[in-house]
Length: 488
Ligand code: C2O
Ligand code: CU
Image 1 (cartoon, helix red, strand yellow):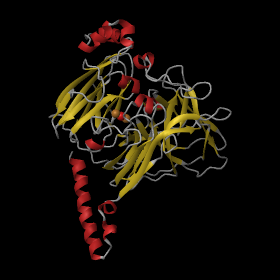
Image 2 (cartoon, rainbow, N blue to C red):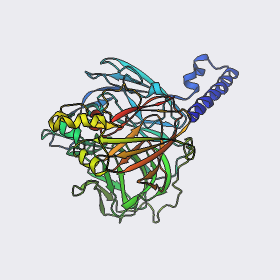
Image 3 (tube, protein in one colour):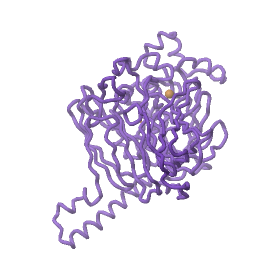
Image 4 (cartoon, helix red, strand yellow):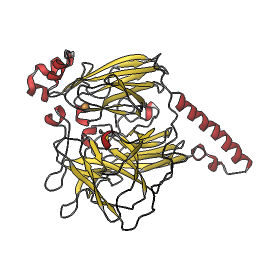
């Protein structure tokens, strides 16, 4: 974990320097406490039931589960290199934890119950502490029964600012979510049902931006907006079409990428994925442009309207540079990398895909399919990673990676569904799809794999410990689509 160690070291050096300075200035001891010297930023989050206004009047408010009373939870915002100390209190009637999605934190701070820490009991609390190693757009959410806890509203944005962010007029953070609401605006309580688990997860009927069904976003011609997108939905994949505007993608999953226009103009985000885009507002003053969400064929809808002011902000599109400084990620050595194979299978119509791909079902799959469809629905194991369906978070490692070595994991999606596959504790380069090298060799922590697709990722396993590796469609995860990767 060279980069993490490095930052810890520089922090220590910083500490020493600060302490020396404090002593020579005759400062009182409490001012030179390590916490202040290291630039520790303190936050507290309380998970508890609350009432939120997701949908406009005349609908009522929605009983949800919230951090500090809101959905999304409070935005945590720090600068790169700062240390976070976050006290989490559990006001729910069940156990919880918090996972800092995409942040490269030490294993004990990763928030997976039983694997990294004991779950936080109702009424209990836990203090997380780690350095913000990478700048970027991240988020936090529980890792305990996530399919229900996240689905009821427990999530929030975590932004780590670059030391010198690119020039913009305005920054917006959009946390996208998708809810299954009843007619009375209550959250439908059919969490984890067999149909959602074995198909494409809990896709809902109400999409929100920052916890509200959006209406209009006022903008001005000539304005440059940095939009940080976070998909906090259990299962919905978003494909955003900014109609006539050409978004420039500058980061994916928090990690800088060569600035480019997305393929087909569509910004695609599987669950848990993030994108930072630069949007130049080039529409006519006084006009309205709809942002359309069109990932699922024939199911497109208007997400929000961009409403242009009559007066432009400026006459020309800004020519300010948009690229972001790189984060301190170790570069994998592809020639000398260890190779590993991972196959995902299961789910409805999985057998057909396996036959078509010329493979045979794993041991677990046979067991799962053998009981017939009904048998399968009532069982935990619906999805399989290398033939095994996981139950609970304490698992024998499916792979053990040599620490500080370079590793390539080739992943095959032998199912009929998309899966956003997430690895904890690391970011990886996506190096190929179906044998074709990717254009940007993007760094991600969650990679969306299409049905029948084969994706290769590469990274240096520099963060020791047992790390979760799972599908971020939370019903798939609950249905067995996860494993543990050990770095030792
Ligand atoms: Cu966003 Cu294992 O989690
Ligand atoms: Cu999945």
